[in-house]
Amino acid sequence: MSQMPQPTALSRCPSCEEPLESGDRYCGACGYDLSVVPAPPPDTPTLTMNGTVPRPAPEAGAVDWPAAPAAAGAEAHAPVHLPTDLAGTDSGGSHLPAADPAQGASRGVRFDRPSEPDDYPLAAPQPADPRTAPPAPPAAEPKVCVACRTGSVDGDGYCEHCGHAQPRERDHMEQESGPGAAVSDRGLRHHRNEDAFALSQTVLPDGSPALVAVVCDGVSSATRPDEASLAAARAASEALLAALPCGTHPQQAMHEAIVAASHAVNALATEPETAQEHTPHQNAPACTLVSAVVTASLLIVGWVGDSRAYWVPVDRTAPPARLTEDDSWAAQMVAAGLMSEAEAYADERAHAITGWLGADAYELEPHTAAFKPDRPGVVVVCTDGLWNYAEAAEEMAEVVPSDAERRPLHAARVLLGHALDGGGHDNVTVAVLPFPAPPQRAGSA
Image 1 (cartoon, rainbow, N blue to C red):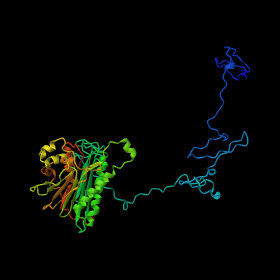
Image 2: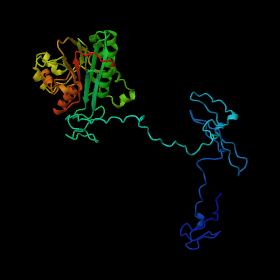
Image 3: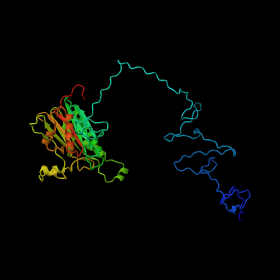
Image 4: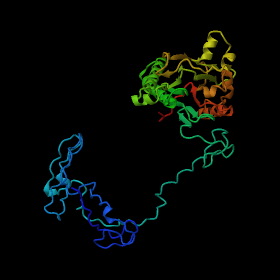
């Protein structure tokens, strides 16, 4: 059946806003038919607060919260749930024990703690006794610029003499360990330092000292080269420090250390499948390695790649020597007699390495060599960031200071400065170890 229009309860005309009276069917001002005004939509709140509306079944894994019981009357408020009305479970899904009424219903924050004073009285400060006051710390020595080695560094990290910006933490690292020292620097062209080193000393079973230096150069074309070099340096150093005190021959210990470093770098290639999906064409992390062990009578070097070790005698009338052979395209050309050394290293393919540590290396071939120098000198262990600017042994000997065996850290800084002055195109890392290894002083480790 048809519906009759019902008188409206509007107070104003929807068309002209003229005030209306109760029972009006038409606007007295504009004649608007008030019977065609649509009825207001029913009020359907999004949330039912009285819990009387049937609830859908809970989804799988969802909590089936209990519904509040219906209120006694229309004016009565729905009851409120307390935390104790819900059965709790621990992280294993087991039900929690029931609350002890004597301790109160809630197991959460307690509000029945005794009141505490708003202010905590502090004892009045006492004047310091000059006889017991600790001595003032010594003033820090001014930091010297790593580039010019003469100017001091201001608070903003720039040299006041040459203006060279000083590097961040890993961008420039220095370490002394007994009579040995090492320095690593980002260089002037790279945005980060992908080199790493480990420097330490230990004691052989007969009580004689042994110095250990490991220098690694991350392969920039690989993924995470900085992580690879750091992992290799740490693993090789730890392996040497574990084997040498046990009586393992240093050359055998060196071989095992390089294998341990290889395993550490290979482990970096293990990534979650999700990471492989986002970067499926990245190379595995990789680096080169060169290491030296110096004892009282023996010098051992080991390497994979094109990082090098040099021998520079204290008596400069004696010839210096390069102790390693590069795993590189240039070295292969020279060994095959196809090019001279000058021609090979002038080629743009010269630094393409043929051996490295990493999961995608062709085959691990650790190189080790043992030497018995007949005179004192220093061993220079470095990456190509240095030897690019002093390639021949004679060139390296010219750069090494004459007092390098007594001041190894100073010598390492001078060698770094030589690379930076030459252009600093690559990361630079160098360790300087004196031979023979001097006996350890009392209390040294």
